[in-house]
Image (cartoon, rainbow, N blue to C red; front, side, top):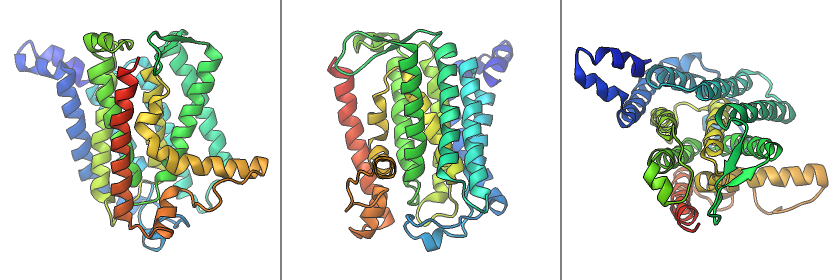
Length: 352
């Protein structure tokens, strides 16, 4: 909305043209998201459901009774900031709606007296992931998908079925690994924030820049800067949430937050055209939560037992077996993710 209004107002005051700059919009979205969240979120604490406590949560006794489901607040702020500041494409409008729907399913679980079953939540994730993948295939890629892959110079054409399956798998994994990582104050929010910052920089400085994309032999994404604004809007909002979620937390994002931000992160990976960027952005979350999901799936469906001496999510193993404090878990996982991101980004973009 603001983007189009400024084209009208700049006739009388030329500095309004700055609001049509994506660099300015990124800054506005980041700060607007942060300050709106910091101001609005604490006013909603008394309306949010209370955490029931989880077995794998460090300090579960302290977490029990805290307001949870904060995702319903900050994801709604995210949609407001995006619709107000950014000239959205039809694809982006659809993705924001899906993000809100993922948040809603999580929030309904957060406020439910009896937790929803794993199969129900998994089925809802699958349905939304398939629908979002189809939307991206037809609206964003116009029915013809090319992936740029690590160690391969030319882009590779992807069959529609392969794309739908790959996209659905990445979205489902991203939703659930982010959700599993939400067990230590600030952990899920911080790791997702690092992932989003990485994706925002990739979209704005590499994929969205003609010369840089050409130099690095990756496809140019014409609206890369536009996606970067969305990403940094969510970054600002997550920073506002972490203002109250830093240890010891005053509020928890709940499934409403973790599932929605995981979904949006997965969307960014698919839109980037390289599904392997999930390793760049989410390697720690994949190991922390994804390995646990694999362990449970192998045991439940195939009676195969692996890593039986390690607790999952991995942050629970670090707390109970290695006696790491919540702060140690947060800082060490964050350091590992930064190191992996820098190393893998260099490999992906330079060895082609």
